[in-house]
Image 1 (cartoon, rainbow, N blue to C red):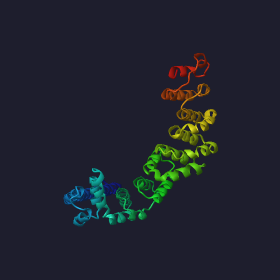
Image 2 (cartoon, rainbow, N blue to C red):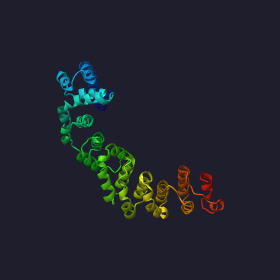
Image 3 (cartoon, rainbow, N blue to C red):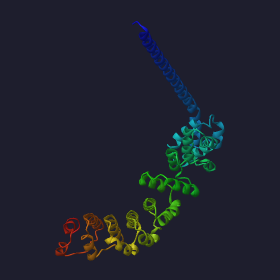
Image 4 (cartoon, rainbow, N blue to C red):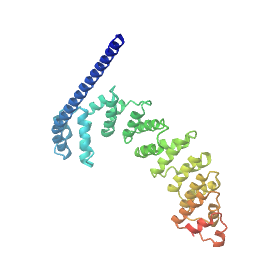
Length: 344
């Protein structure tokens, strides 16, 4: 190469090669550092586990009291220790588990540090361990952040079994902030909170008429809890609510929990304009009334929707309580073939 332009190109190539070499060297040094650091941490954890294991096992079998064991422990206020202790807690039940939980609660100072940490990862660890050990004096340090979806949802999930009504009330309110969460997922969390939250769910069903999404989840949760004491609001819900999803959910609840005394309230919905509501009403009525009349059967199998007829046929077949109807009368039904095939 010759000339000034060739020299410029050569200089640029040398600079680029030098930059790439420096970047490669830097990445190599970072990789070596991380490898050494991780190896050191793993070796340190193995060493510490050897010191922790005999003491934890002694607490588990009852030969050493949790308080005495805590005094003997080294590095007892570390996240690694609490996570290692969790491995043992997950493997045992009853008295052994309670002794290990008591041992973990003695390190609640570490939980405090984690919960108020500025590091998001540490706060996640703190929330998880708080949900495991349930030291009541640490709940006040929870910092919910509605803009941090993952952290807030983790808090709700971990705290769902805490025996504190006010905290559960707060968690329920937070759950409904996230409208894009699966209703089944929300209901699973609410069921795990236990019957303590039934007054909150009852309030949602009664008062949140402008938010049918919340009403449906509340009704489904009550149904899955097999809680019967919300049948007393049946008349109010069925008369004052016009949302098909809410009506369908409550009729399903009545199907499982209702009795013959409420069956009359359901008949009104045999003519509802939405087929889903009619189907739920038919199933609820057949489950509650004990016996159906020929007029009822005629209504079900002359319904505009075949889905209602099929649903009624399945329920009648399951209940095995269909009334006697003449064959020529069945032939006049709109969906008579379904009745003859599935019920008659």
